[in-house]
Length: 160
Image (spheres, rainbow, N blue to C red):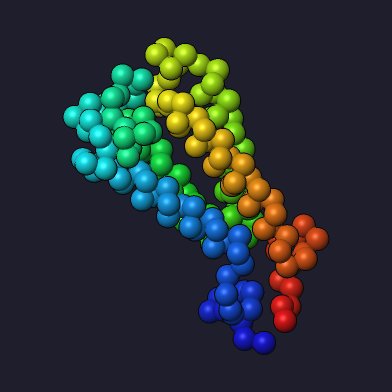
């Protein structure tokens, strides 16, 4: 059986959980970058640092700020880095999903015109965070055991 360049798991396609983590990371990088593009971001001249007073909206729908875009960029880089191993990819997807569900709850708990809305988020962001949270958490939990390792993420299993 051919081994990878580092002598690790067998050469071949990467496990789906790693591909999904890399794809999610790439999407976050693109979204973070698009937040700094006038035209894609409406009211770009109102883009603020870290406040609910930022009037800029990605695609005219999602309220963003420089902090919000920066978090997307960092989360995207983290996803690409963590997609390198099965365990880290699982942590990125499941942990990131849990974090987005917490952010969804936070978004509904705060007053959107208050100082606590420093990211900032609006109703559209909140619903997107709910979807991202469930989607990432589900992917992290369901795809992590795709080769029947019984939960052990360090044991390669021969595939047909």
